[in-house]
Amino acid sequence: MKCNKVMERYCSLDAGENVPLGVRVHLFRCPRCSREAQLLDQELLRVKDTFPFQMEHDASDAIMRHVYLSPVRYSRHVSSFKWMITGIILFAGMMLLPFSQSLSWLNNFYGEKFLFPLHLIMGVMISIYAVIMVGSNLEELKSYVDDKLDKYL
Ligand SMILES: [Zn+2]
Image 1 (cartoon, rainbow, N blue to C red):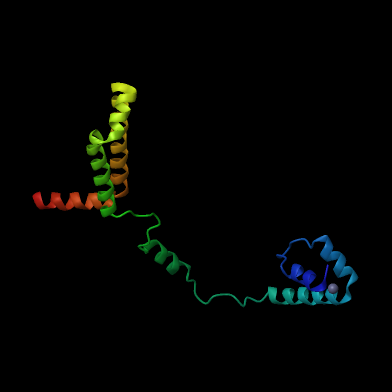
Image 2 (spheres, protein in one colour):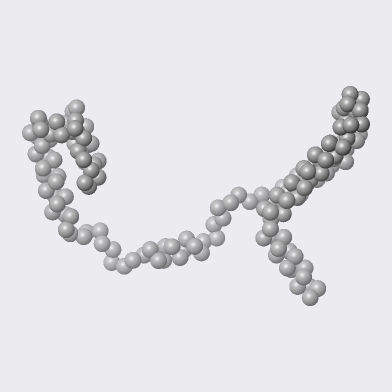
C-alpha cells in the first residue's frame, strides 16, 4: 500500500474506529507515515476539548418550523384538466365500442357470452377511475362542495 493511500484511509477513519490491518502494518514499517499519524492524533486530541463549532444560538427550532409550515407538497398532483380529458376519452371509447369492428368480430367469434364480462370490466374501470379521481382531488372537491353549500345555507 502506498503512503498517500494509507494516510487517506487513516484520515477517513471515524473516532474510535479500528485501524485496518494493512494500514497498521504500513504505519509500523514506514516512519514518515507513522510520524504523520502521531501528529494527526495529537492535533485531534488537542482540538477535542475545545468547541470551535459551538453555535451562538440554536437555529433548529426556526428551521423545523419553516419546514413544517412550508407549502411544499410531496405527492404528485394531476390537474383537473387531465382528469377530465381522461374521463372523456374513457366514456367516448365506451360509447363508441358498439360501433367498432372489433366488437362485431368478437361477437362473431365468441357469440353473446362475452358481452356480460365486457360490460362488467368497463363498469369496474369506470369505478376505479372515479375512485382514483375523487381520492386524488379530495381537497379541491371538498372546497368546491363547501363553497356551494355556503351559497345555499
Ligand atoms: Zn508511508
